Structure formats: C-alpha cells, structure tokens
Length: 74
Image (tube, rainbow, N blue to C red; front, side, top):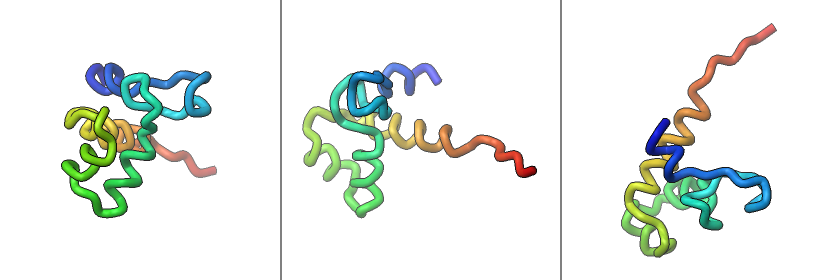
C-alpha cells in the first residue's frame, strides 16, 4: 500500500482517529462524500484547496482496499 500509506494517515489524536489525507484535517470520508454527492475531481479540489489530485486517488484506493476483505459467516 506504499503510496496510500504516504497519503492517508491515521492519528488517534486527530479527527477521532479517522483516516485523513497527509496529516491534514481532511478526512477520507469527506473526500468520498463529495464524490458521492456528484462533484467531479476538479470540483473536489476547488472545495478543498489543500488537496492534491493524487490525494483523491489515494482516498478511493484506501476505501476500496478497506471494503475488499473476506467476510466469514457462521
């Protein structure tokens, strides 16, 4: 997960320990919510000017990898 680990950080003392972008107070979920609301990547970058294009890709990859795990049913 090299590039994701470089861009997505988790700090228990920041944003309640939720995953953030590069140590900023921009949570991964904030980026995902904007995309889910229909904003384009360029619009997300305009809304969050400290964000970089590669940060959006890292958020999407992070979410994808968090969801792609086996679920065992008893």
